[in-house]
Length: 290
Image 1 (spheres, rainbow, N blue to C red):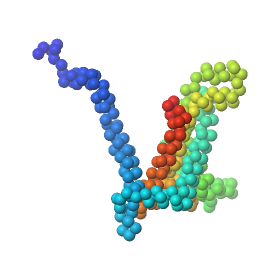
Image 2 (cartoon, rainbow, N blue to C red):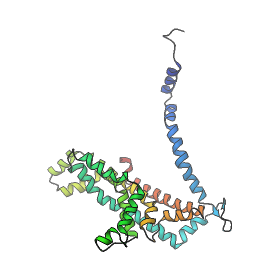
Image 3 (cartoon, rainbow, N blue to C red):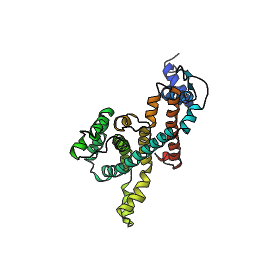
Image 4 (tube, rainbow, N blue to C red):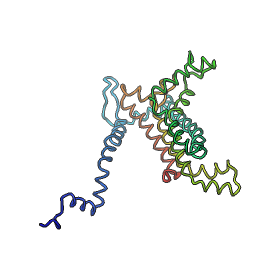
């Protein structure tokens, strides 16, 4: 066979992939999809399945028999209903606080600060993420401590450990996850739209409300997904600064070693809440515009 007509195995394989687009796409997605299935989908499926099992009251062994006992207990016991509502309330409060803080900060970073200062402001905004989660929470524990804490020793007053401390600390922890998408959304708004609104006689506040915010709404939704989900599943912050307060994550942590199926049912509830939140967000059309 002459060199002109010889085809190397590599070129033959490349030609085969070029002719079969589906196989090429499957090859590209095989590794990440396998990773996703093994490390996320499969554990999540096992979580839901084990939520329908039960624990033998005498031996403490897990009985792999289908039962709705865990969910009946979860949805009928007033204590767990209260914990679920408080968890939802904390997640909503943290998300709203992050929105209130992130919008003016993101606006300043994207539309007011000069191009020279914008990279520095982004770096400063990301700086808290470089520190350890536990270090930051323990620092806030020192601040809120009613005995010898920073607030108590300097101002003579501290809210102490409780829900106020939990909301403030979680807001501090997750605020960068809200600022970053808001900043990017603000930055992508064409200046011509703002100039046109001003030329038509709209005030700065009206332009902000009716022109800028509707455009960056998908960015607000993206940030809220982070803050809501991270707050919903948190339990370490509640343990350190929440005092006697409890969230669903604490119930999972406390029940994991003694009643695994019930812990799985509680964890499933947080997943269902998040699915409901994403469904509600999807109906707004914001996810399609991200």
